[in-house]
Amino acid sequence: MLSRLSAGALKKAANLEHLAQRMFSPVRVLLRFWQVRFASSNSSSSNAFESALNSRATLASVSLVTAGSIAWYTHLYGTLPFLGEAHAGHLSDEGLHPPAYPWSHKGVLDTFDHASIRRGYQVYREVCAACHSLDRIAWRNLVGVSHTADEARVMAEEVEYEDGPNSEGEMFQRPGKLADYMPPPYANEEAARAGNAGALPPDLSLIVKARHGGADYIFSLLTGYIDPPAGVEIREGMNYNPYFLVAPSPWLFEFRNTGNSSQMAKDVATFLSWAAEPEHDERKKYGIKAVIIFSTLTLISLYVKRFKWTAIKNRKIQYNPPTNQ
Image 1 (cartoon, one colour):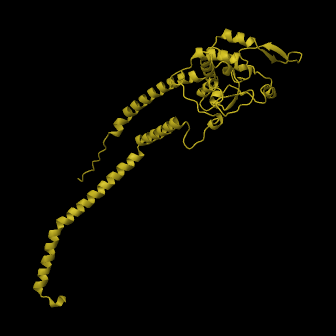
Image 2 (image 1 turned 120 degrees about the vertical axis):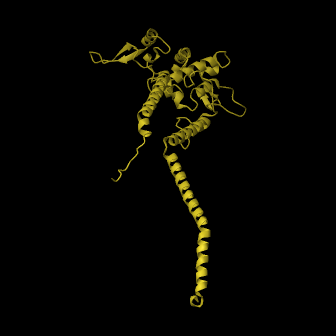
Image 3 (image 1 turned 180 degrees about the vertical axis):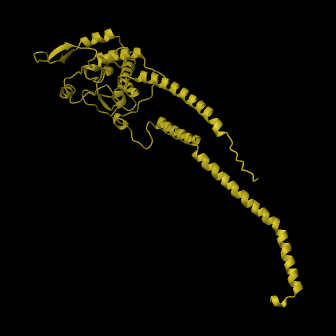
């Protein structure tokens, strides 16, 4: 077919092709420009995204959001997410959930009311110690908290402890010392069960940590004894308590109508809170010191890092190639 075309037609066709190339060359340049710009923008956005992912600020932000979410969930529901409760007693075993009370030691920077601890120990000694032990508390633990050293020594000497053997190989009785632990009410577990109709009175050293609700549960239990509602039958020697469905008759059930039962329950709950965590006040004191020290060290380290590395991070390296002579 090309052989049939004349030389003039071929030349005219070549001129048209050249004109078309000249007309569409700006369009092609524009397309090439947009392709390069789009690629560079994609590359820059990708690099920015990767740098954001790898930055320490992003890692710290994600960590803070995660920790805050876990703390808020724990505040709302009382347990850590995806983990079971770590309590010796469960709500289904204890009955009604106790309300939250504004304890004087509940805040982050609050300490125990030591006058309340002293009154609570008096309540424990006169009433609770008849059935419940306090195995983890020694007389020396009271010194500087609720009693002086002389007062604690006098109380310890009122109790006889078995010691020995002596030079003849025999055991003997001696007055108590500050290093001795508070004596149990029963010689062994069998004697405790025999004196309480088969029930074993729990040790109160860690009772606040062993019950869901802590001091709130102890206070609610001691002040919660009421007459059973209609249709509820209680065995002889037992009494109704909505916080512990069937419980023995305590001293507060007999004095529930007196004016100081709530005060005594509050004091003994404070004392048991201290007994479960005697290092409470010291721990918060050291925590404040640690926060101050580490905050100061963090600021100093940031300043030193900025002072040392600013000159290195902001310097420019320029290469001047040698010229051909």
